Length: 441
Image (cartoon, rainbow, N blue to C red):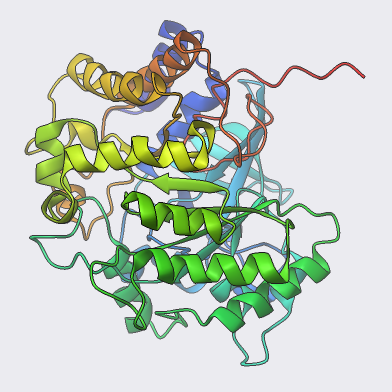
């Protein structure tokens, strides 16, 4: 790419899609293509003043740890906030995905003030999350809170990956864009602490520390998640395994946080167990809408459950949780991944919108994560550039339009909507929705 061409591309898209907030254009580009960090912008890990990247489930990096250079030893921040600059950006929270060869770079200027640079020009100020007080305390076992119960989305969400691996294993079963199993292996290889199955008592102990020191009550929700369970873990099936953490949390901290579970689309009785255990929001992720792509890119899910049954279970779960509280995720961008994906943005958007209409017509609001092409995954290897930025921008437009068509508002458990307000950091769907109307007193 010629010099300055990325700036030209971004500005062209801002002009062509004026209804999409300009903040979201930068955010999607950073999420899909990653960002480089000058050594001046790296954290001092858990001993410093900046909250470091916790690798809470996937790597979300464009290189393996050994390829990241100093960023593997001194972690980058968990997230960055963009503000100001020549585009006058409103406060935008972006999850950090490291890519040493990205045209975007975070660096300090001569005065030590961090900024985001694109094609060598400073385009915004960069804020980094302060080290939360609760990260400075350890569990009785010596484990860190960051390892057991990291927080993301600027402290809004406690992310409990209680099972670090996935039982969809190997090329015939693993989702083709997912590096959960590799991420587990690379952290082990680097000698980093990375607990496979988290002990329920340790989770409660970490939450106790967060509850004690999060005096501002910034943490509002927790997510229970991990790999798919096709057999059992510690003698429990998937609903019972994830559910027993929720039950313990709700008994110890009734109503303190909004409880969410990311699990497979399970049969109705299993979903009912989640509800009975006190879970409030259920995320049975459908990953990609197109029938052929689901088969090719989610072979384990296709084999064990099947796409039609998966969708039927999502609709069934709305009867238990209420449609507003069923929020399935999809991985935005894999629709355009070679070798099987759509080759035009028009086709990809049409397919994804069909899926949005299917769910939203039933009152269910999906959400999405911007695909990060991780290099150890088949799709990441084949598509190091990810999907075109235009796809991501048009998806935001289609998403908002479809929500308006069905009279839906932003889903619960994601913090505030609207550019300048949103904290959801792994896609711009919340940044692109209308801000809540201030309620009249």
